[in-house]
Image 1: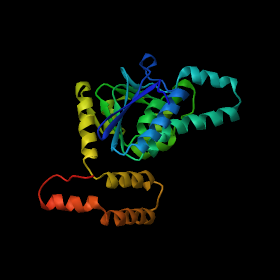
Image 2: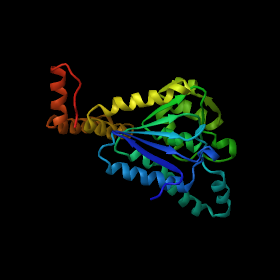
Image 3: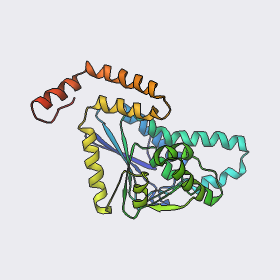
Image 4: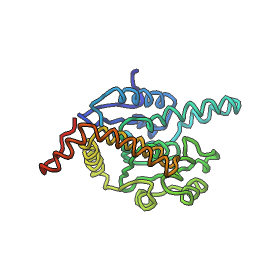
Length: 260
């Protein structure tokens, strides 16, 4: 698939996906969603990739759904729009199914569905001054793109209710205070901080990282008993693996491990 609205590149174990519609602040179109889903498939086939950085081109991360697409929905019946929305959501939320961790590098505004796309990533870093908000109700629209699923799980039900019912915008520092983003960095230091975190992940055991991500995704839906079963199963696979053996050797030899 030829990419027109995203860019995908690789630097050893670190891959990067860029939302590339800066002229419309990376507004999210169905075409962009198809390209993201295709990129996720390609990344799944690239064994070298251990972590993905996701960013927006220009001054925004993503300004939400493309208003032209939203306006076109008025011509369709509710059932048709329900089907279209389900397809639209799933294209972008394919990022959650990626086998390696993803880091949203929020260089600018992350609004509406754009915030949800960042929330679908495993880790979020933001530039100081960036604005974030789930502003759906401010334009007369019920939240979508898993907003009512993701935000309560990240910031808790009370704060999610505040964000979703008011539709207000918050700055990056407030987002960090409530746990919506993991850390805030000066704009000229954001890329370096993201790369440093990506390298920390890439230098860890790829199998252990992948299995940990898989377990974390289901933790809030599982009981404690089911979570313990999942952890015991994943550890049972690691005990016979070369990564754990190398990790123990490296610890005993007081050096960094060299995972394959």
